[in-house]
Length: 441
Image 1 (cartoon, rainbow, N blue to C red):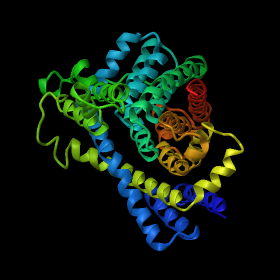
Image 2: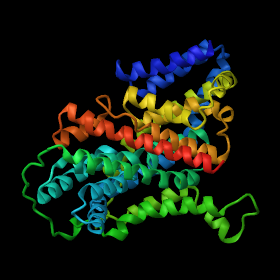
Image 3: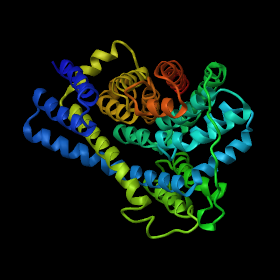
């Protein structure tokens, strides 16, 4: 019956969030309570699981998500994201447009959400396609896939951070494994865009007149200043993971241990992002300014993440781990189970972040039975969840509509190009995770 209740719970979450358009927070909270009651949990134990699941999850990653969103807001509003785009474009060259747009999307989507990143870089994709006299399809699909790869795989984007927090994975190890695997997926996406999508005729439209601003207060920051809020936190987190061990922590290692804590690293990144505007004003930091709007946008993610923590805790304490673990162990799915869970949820309800959080919550009680309860196993499970959360983007995904509508694709073309592209990058990343699991034992 516990297995039946779990299956029913997943189906109900999908129906509530897709058909009835209920907010994922309400769906996860309601299903968690119903599951706990149906599985026979005592009322006091259920309430304790709800409180500890929500508070414990947000206690680990709530600040990280908020700080990451604030960094993204300053990069976006100050023009730093556009500076990064222009610089990477110069390095790669305008003749390799799909490659350039894929790399740009990959870089920009680490601090900025997919939708914002696409809208930010779409004019550049159209301008380059017009100048080169080629179809917009290659540049648009490469950009969309590049954004999707880092959005689902590379911290400090909220989804992977949330999944790492739920599973108790070392964020530094997640980054170490996610980076090469995400590059492999990016290569597959760029090849798909340049060799296949590029053949589809798609008009880039006419050039719009631009009036550049020369006022010092409106000038975007330089490349070095723009890249620091992204690179410094990542380096600090990875450095801690690489240097800090269980031995006595003293001297410089103690400093690395402190600075490499994700909250401290992201706080340093946020402080560096305050250097991006030409003139920092109190209005930017106000409740109605850049910071206020960023925190407002983070609220939904925080609630969904907390509710995912509730679902995972209720599942963990209901006793289903042993039952379901024994059932799944005989199939030897191993590292493929996280991918399949996230892929099923993503395809069904559309949101990569919701898929990551919900699948991580379901996976949490099963980690020991799957042999993924080691530090390496947890990190690879997070990356596998990220790979699954990119499969399959279609009409129930808001980003699908951003890509197709902004680039002028019809729905059929969108399914053929962008939907298939997300399937490819997800499967490529999952294969990379599987190969890593074999090599790392």
